[in-house]
Image (cartoon, rainbow, N blue to C red):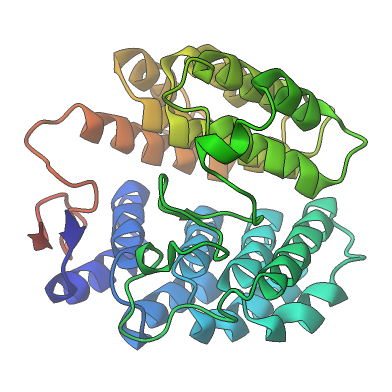
Length: 343
């Protein structure tokens, strides 16, 4: 099921209301990501990226633009990356989006921030540049998101970095099928992920290889390796946040306790705690919802973590609601009624 273009006015109105519940606005952003790429979807997202008061919303707008591989958003993403006063989560996501779009024109911009004061930005730019170089080497399209093309789903061909199993544009170009990942054992991939002396792109490749164990006899061992990486407080925050994201894609019940511990670590980087919260929301269930409520309603001092928990709680409640068929149901008033969907 996908959201139809007829719902675009309602979606735009919903996400541009800063007084609307953040969870409902995030539903609208998710919905825009699934619509054909063009000015109608780009402009609301770039407006959010450049002016929304919520760092979480700005981050999610950058993420959506990258996932849609919208080359027309490159200027706005470059400006967000260049703004050293911006939240590091947003700057990171803008850099990653430029890599996901795949346009070599982003190379000078990304190269400029290889010596940025924030390690998360530096690491993201390295990965984005490596992604662009790898895409060029395999002859991938130089920039996605042509007007009228559906965001993400239409670019699942080899070399584009779109994982067809998870419908995501990954930050590195690696084989993501179980057959490709199976050339090494889960134990070997786990060791590669844990190797802090290895290049970050190598560790990311190991992470996505572990993700590819979903549905196999090795899935539990792969999940445990990912949980161990997420919990390593001395490791790269960028890597840890991506591991939490992958755990959210897998949504294994056995990850609830490790993710909860990451979320509960007040001194952990907000970008890691944010992703742990949303991963918990993807897993869902009464236990998760009770846990997430402890971080909402002003109980959590870090705004991006508090808002992430509100979004995660909404995700979990949707998972358990048999009456609501699609997570992206939104209306202009910020509610959660169907806004026009097609099968």
